[in-house]
Every structure is written in C-alpha cells, then in structure tokens.
Image 1 (cartoon, rainbow, N blue to C red):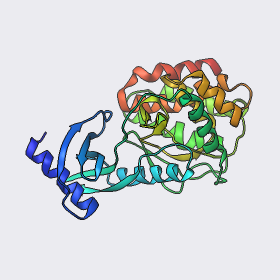
Image 2 (image 1 turned 180 degrees about the vertical axis):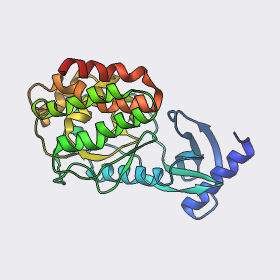
Image 3 (image 1 turned 30 degrees about the horizontal axis):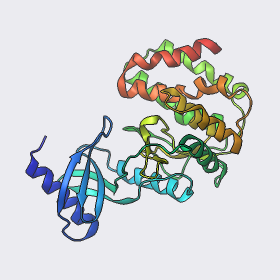
Image 4 (image 1 turned 90 degrees about the horizontal axis):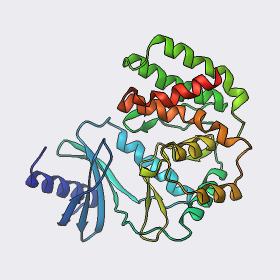
Length: 294
C-alpha cells in the first residue's frame, strides 16, 4: 500500500506521460475494478479520466487490452471507452482512458444492445478463428493462434489449455482430465458451423456499463475472432441480461436452432477459467456438462 502523497505523485506522473504537460488533479476517488487491478477516477482540467494499474502485471497485459479496445471501437457498433495511453510510472504498469459516467439505462437499452452486438458479430472481417496476437482473460494468458476450424480452436486454444492448467495446479486429477477430454470427439456433432465473428471475449454483466447516454458500453475485453455462440453463452453464465437483449439479437442475426442446448458446452471454457482463477468450487459447471454427454 502507499500513502496519499504517493498516490498523488503516481497520478500526476501518469498524466504527464500521457499529455506531455503537468495536469493538476482536482479530485480523485477509487472505483470498483475487479479483483486484479487498482482503479481510480481522476477529475482534471482534461475531464474525467480512468486509470488502472498493477504492480506485477504481465509486461504486455495493458498493451493487448488497449489493442482489444481499439478493435472493438473500430467495429463501431457499441460504445467503447477512448484509450489515452499506457506505460509505467513509479514502478507500476498503468492504462489510462476516458471515464464513463454511469446513468440509468434508456428504455430501449437491451433492444439496442442486442441489435448492436449482432451487427458487430455479423461484420466478419477474418476467415480464421483466433487473432494475430495473444491476450488475457482476467490475468490468465489466452492463446489466439489462428485456426481454420472452430472445433480445433475451441479444443486446443481454450478447453485443453485450461484443463491442463487446472491439472498442473492440482485442482483436478488425471482421471478428471482423461474423462473431460472424451467430450472433444462429441463436439463436431454438438456445435454448428458458423463464420468467425469479432467477439468481446469476456462478456458478463460486470464488463458492461451504462454510459451517460443510457446505452451499453463495454470494458475489459478478451478479444478474438470466435464462434458468436460462445459470446452469447457467456452472457448467461451469471445472468443479468434481459430477454429482450436476446430477442433483438436474433432479429438481426438469428442463431441456429438449439442454441439453448449448447450454452453449457461453450461455458465450459469460462468455468475452467474461473477454476484456475478462483478455485475448484467452479468445477461443478464443467462436471455437469461432461456427465450429460458421456
């Protein structure tokens, strides 16, 4: 921990690196930032700014986050905070962007959000699943090595990486891994073919804000080109998304029949991520799916 003077010095150093001039901090307040980063809202003559920093983040964590924000912003469908800079100040890696003032959702909030996400998914610009760089989901590395086939990508770059990490960390045993891997052969008959879509990659309610205009704004991406059903499935893992969100999405870009039966299959990935981040209590979500299909 550091004292108030240290905090003020850190913020002023970040602002100087970002704007190339001294920017006095009129006021600051710490805000919710999940379990990984320290986060603060600064009030300055440049407006309200949002900073997050970490003393031991992987060297490129904020760099690839900025790249993900840029990809989503260029898609032009959903509000994304404007990225202002990244670097290291006083031994702490940081990322700085505009601060999103929160407001009450507009009456068409969920309908607009669903339609805009569908348009983002529909605007395919890549023929392979993956991305030209790796990134992170939470603090875990996420491999995005491109693959032509979604099943291959889902197995090799998502499920297998996480189940082997859980085995390495002693969270599951060899018997669990062996049984889990048997589901891989079932996936081609369970998951439909769909072209790669640009997806946020960590789409739960905690990464969705309501901006000052009453519309959805996305933060903390784990971007890649993937099967859009994994994105829609992630929204159901912890709930919080209104039914009108899904209805509106389907009006713009209909999902293939039987999607509801596939949700738990896709969510094996975020469940395994949560196992590796927070412990074995999340294994039940994975075990339930494995037992259903084996």
